[in-house]
Length: 373
Image (cartoon, rainbow, N blue to C red):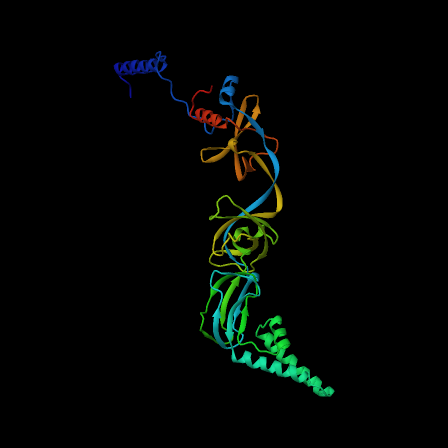
């Protein structure tokens, strides 16, 4: 089909007009089309000398140091069972006189109770009779051996009542019996439990007192399951008690529990502590720093060199004069004013210590597209 000459002319004019609009230059001041932002943070920051001086930038080299791991544990003070004694009645009887009460300090051999016992009276009579028989004249060898056996038997049965050798010797020397059996303290210590009163009748084997020597106590620490591999018998520990702020107590672990507590996921570590002043009292809570026996090595930088940036830990490594590059790192345990670096650095890398926060600010500016000084 043939196109009408008028229509063809109109189409030609339209095409020419559109072409001139497309080729028209942009007017002055017309904004340019935005460029896409670059991905990622800047690779480095270079500061002018005056900016370095103003920021107070000071560098330090990452260095390897020997370290000893410290395990934290909590626990409580307990009686030293090796310095604790139960005093009980060795024979049935009645308490006639009571000389010690709960809280009293006593000495080994001190009389705590005077005890009336029929058995004690009978045994003393047997001892005196056996002694008199052994001294008779004209006994043949068989009779002398028999009397000696009876005498030794009476002595031993009195010793089983905890009669002191001096008291026994006095009976044999004078031939006079004692009316009351003295019950004596077996160790130096403090009466921590008194279970009787004067006039009480006691059966054999009944507890009368519990005595503890508090100049030595145990610290029973609870070591978590995750720390068991770092703790050994002989590991040194420094303990603190809340009752005495600023004071420390040193000791060594002498025993580790063999069973893990299923509820607390801990084992017990026991420390024998000297307690000459009696300040540490059973039941007190303590916390402890236990030194792991093996020493290791780790890489450290000043703690002030490490900054938080975009949910990561970073340091600024010097790559040239006045130039620093951010480096992602993984940190470990502190050591005084230093911080362990587990990943991201090697020994000898020089990082910004003082002034690293200023570098972090400049990094943030560059990330946001602002000018650098």
